[in-house]
Length: 631
Picture 1 (cartoon, rainbow, N blue to C red):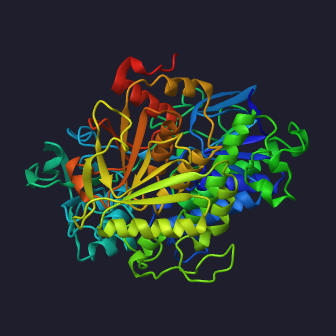
Picture 2 (picture 1 turned 180 degrees about the horizontal axis):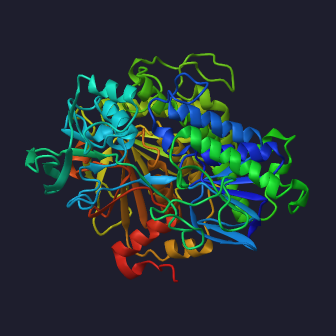
Picture 3 (picture 1 turned 120 degrees about the vertical axis):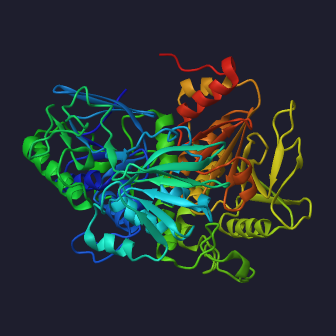
């Protein structure tokens, strides 16, 4: 049965969040569906200086504030990927990978995605030298040649950002000058670690396992020139965006470029459907215009659909209980149109989201501002921290604990454990192992219900790949390598195994780590019967290696999907590798984009993956052993 709402907003960027704020203030019930992190493209901006009333901030901080505003007003925000939408004058049905929703009013604010240039080699070397996100992938090109393609805002900002990893950064601009604001362009031109080539474009790229050669062409002279390197070359492409309208362009009228056509009130051609943000046709696509779109759409809805004429929802609906602050975040018992399993799933999502929202911008903000932090994502320098202070009051944390500022949220997660989760920590005498041990000691203090055991192995002074281990591998056909240090997660009785983190799971990956503990301890996150049937049909051992960086906002979704599969299958083993702490893994597998996925040590994939997408990949890898979805 579809879950009913008064208004559903597809997209949790500036436009969607602003619409949610305005609609909730007007008394409407609101559900926001966002497949990634709330905030959209602006979230990764290092510096925001042109938003009226705020002299300077970063995108992460600004969008986190906007998200809190929407939640505080009573908007529900769910991290779900919309896979289809039926939008007609008589009804709107939205399907995500988890649920079905119905609403008389929908705001489509799905935003845009990076545009590709489609030169020869671009698709072939995507993830192997070609990148589109400096925040996610920049660190992987430390001390390697880096080229940035584009002359707009994103290219200018990201070129400066990337100088922290390699110098000089070469900026390739097709036009005779920048297309962004003059002040920003002048800042880039004056930057000592950036070199600029105007009137230039890429003809093709070549290489073997990664990009090793770039052929350029000067647009004025027609002359071609080449850059070659024996090591990997990084090419970051920032040449604009494409509107995400493929899902609705057969129902909603778009222009030739795919942008949604709306009137001045943000109405589309379908009654009850509105557009907002970068997905719409307009002259200027900036944060301020996205926010304006969201506000205009909400006000138009209030005029077109007076609140007293909207279908009434049950009084216990969470968004209608504004006097109860707890109702502003989802909880297991708050939903009236869902099955028990769906409600428990929502409860788990909300619990983990509470922690995620607390730490969302912590590491990225430190990275942007240059505040001192170690490169592994720990909030404080683990090597300099002393032993736990004696005599701490029960329920309190040491001020220097990396979990001090999220202690209430993680205690709430711990209180829901049905059994005792167990962490088996395998260490050697390397620096990374020391960091992992300190991380786990802090975790033990914060979450005493987690049972932690330690095992020492080897002594070579560096994090390394250990020998074969039958305990670490679920398959007897070929015992696989074990990366040390490692944190293996299972339930106390050992029922669920196959979930491993290698390195300190800090930054964005702490939420994935916490979610894995929740899966091991129960109740965890239930899956649809169809997915469970697929997982149960896996008959041969499957190893999933996932490479991550702790600043990547896209990595947690793939990690969480992989852990969910491992938690429900005795055949699946997941190894999450912090690439900053295991450069040998990165070099061996030529990882230059995250999230990185390798199945059974062979085929590789890039980008975030839902559980359904991951199961399709597993099915492709091992054939008929997996019951794939029909239709």
